[in-house]
Image 1 (spheres, one colour):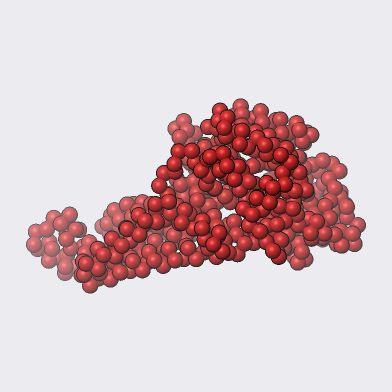
Image 2 (image 1 turned 90 degrees about the vertical axis):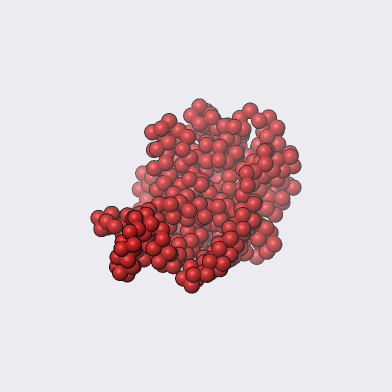
Length: 507
């Protein structure tokens, strides 16, 4: 429990920095728009229509949409615009904050008693004087209600920024879901909820102070919020020189390997932080831009997704091809293979495969129309799935994506009949699954490889700390380490599994 909550301060600071920045940007955009909208119906229709449209887009999709947009903009201006991390998260959350502030501002201004405005005109006030001395004080309570709503929405949605490489309290939630560590999920949820309630309560006091014309209450609540934010943001201050960022995708093996790498770098004198739960494209993109220094990927993933290769040469040729391509096109260094492969391997419940007489993908193709297929979230969109379908003509009765952990649950419970398992997963043996052979060789090799950011290409000390990991992890050890985290009883954390794995390495 304490280990899970020990990560909260750092992630809370990042979460708060992102949410407050988004709220501030939302205020900067929406307040002038509210004034313009109250004076011009055409502007109001366009502004409120756009803000309402944004709200109809799922927040996760909105975050993802900024990735290609920023990539395109960066290419247009010759680079330099980050497509991952803070910027796309800031833009997406700011758009989400627009509607409640804008709508409450427009509503408040529209409902001011016309007699008050006439009185201001009668006193000879200018337009700006009316805005600041008459309209602003009258609309402030209604506007504060909108700001409170926007603050709570923004804090809640910020948990999704983990998926585009921005650290947040969502790191705990996504990691907990993947490893079935409900303490991590609870830590992330509780911290996000407490943060939202605290901010809402302080803004509520400010709203009450404005409504009752109690300036002391208003300023005291806002000052408390500002001081609390400064204290909470302390862990987010610029990292000390020498801090290394270790990236990881969103499943148990990646969390374990990230900690294994982190422990070695800490022993070599580096300060280490982690950015976990990244998608495949996000992780590689973050490496090329230097947002992360190192992570473990799989040769087949780079081969098919980044290089767009459809041929399937031997494993060694794929690793060599990936190393050459990554260095030539992105300056990324492939330090070496860790010694094991984690390939996609189609799996069925052992008794079910035996009863149906299925031992290979060729056998599966003959009965697939009667079977339900469960996959991880990426698989149905990956080139590997397209290659398998072309090679075997697979067509299932249904195909549903799950988080990897729940994909195994779906198979065990009978909700699914086939899954694309991971060959280094300890649950294959524990759950007595049957791995189907791939006689046509449609699935490429997936050697686990260490990839270094361009800025680490000449860092001899950094590479020396990690070189003992090359070729040192047999697949049997990796399966055991994965199962320590994934099993239901006596579960270990990724950090504990990494220490166990390190104790049994070949060197």
